[in-house]
Image 1 (cartoon, rainbow, N blue to C red):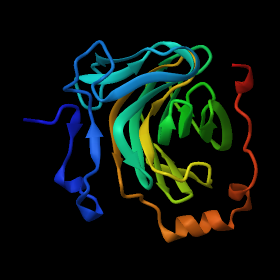
Image 2: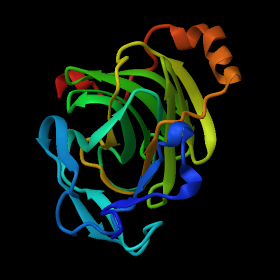
Image 3: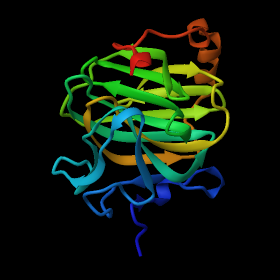
Image 4: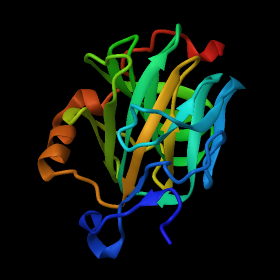
Length: 238
């Protein structure tokens, strides 16, 4: 019998025999949070996570949709534990007057403590943050076009304190940080009143980080330094 929610291919086998896994949501019951996930939020409001059918899905018929409104809606994949590896998702920002964002989280302890990288179609940028006790701090950003109503791919490779963010197949930037050192869960993320679709959520234990990537981050004082640019709002007020 096919694993519910998971599509695992032999081509994705990782070193040591541990497979990468891709969640397509196509075997999930529509209308609610998929089995094995926790739909919640960081901060105030009420996130609304549900599996729905969508004709534009990269892998038809279903996607995971967030259509509520909260400070930071988060959907966490339970029974995952990665210290080093990667997380990747295809996302489509649909609407939102305040934000149109889609992101991934990793080394997640709970709904208030995790790393997050996201892309925002209203701001046209890609960023990386850590969220500690519910407070999000931006570390670095790249200004780049993020189109609404189009599918994009966001990926983060992480090993030790090295992180590389890739957006639509192109390396965005690298970052070094020691906030969360232990293994944690992975998942997806949006912001505020974003209505966002997610599909083909992948994760695994092999990080595509080269020695050149790490050497570049070691040399870059900006990567080691203080906070990056602030976001377009004041999260402390939320």
